[in-house]
Image (cartoon, rainbow, N blue to C red):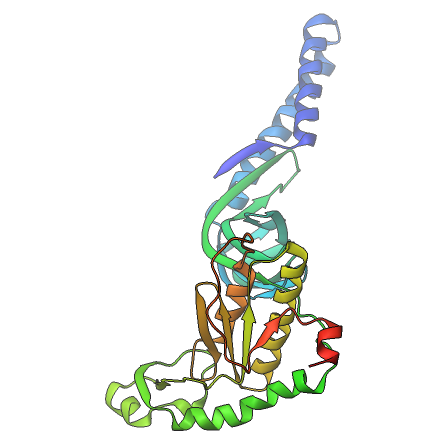
Length: 319
């Protein structure tokens, strides 16, 4: 735990020093002695009270939700206050993008689960470095701070763009209906543990009976993506951001329709969605993707049905 004076505490210390100098330089000794005793008592109570209020307080980061860049990321925090009542706590979260106040409960007792929001993060993967609990209670002359380790990551994916108004483009999402049916006929590649986002129809119930835990079927999945997206990262930053925003829109749309999306790019060719890699991993890739120079590697060959991003309105008109 760290303890440091606040701005009010610094001013109070300067005033206390002035009173001590006046006590030694003027004949009004009794008056200044009483004032010095009062200020010293006030300062001692403030320091001891601040340390006592924060002693044993810890915090734990439970969950951080992904959100579009610049949006609100919902955060859940568990504060352990022990058996005593704590006053004036402030919870701060430090990431690679800076520090933000998440919550400031006036009074807590025992364990309390809090919900907060972190805002304004740029596109990318933001590592959570530390979770801090601070308090200026009781007089605000000093601040006690407890730092709690928080090993987590905040995914700020590209804000989904408004897709060009074209039947062929929007209708491409309808391929997922046939693809979903086709994936049921694909050969079984392996069995794996159930993950959030998997369909119950993919659960292998016999394996569940043997293992005692939910197990899903992973299929070969060749050509089973509801829609295929091709992103050649050799482009200018503005155009690259447009491609990522459109890809984000396609990913969110296919996730809502419980279909799949295949993203092809330099060094990347993965199918996301039901029965495959979770959709959240697609958003994570879009958050971390970076453009390449014009002489960079050539992307893998795409199928004739793949959509090459970004799609401009003029291209959509002639599609």
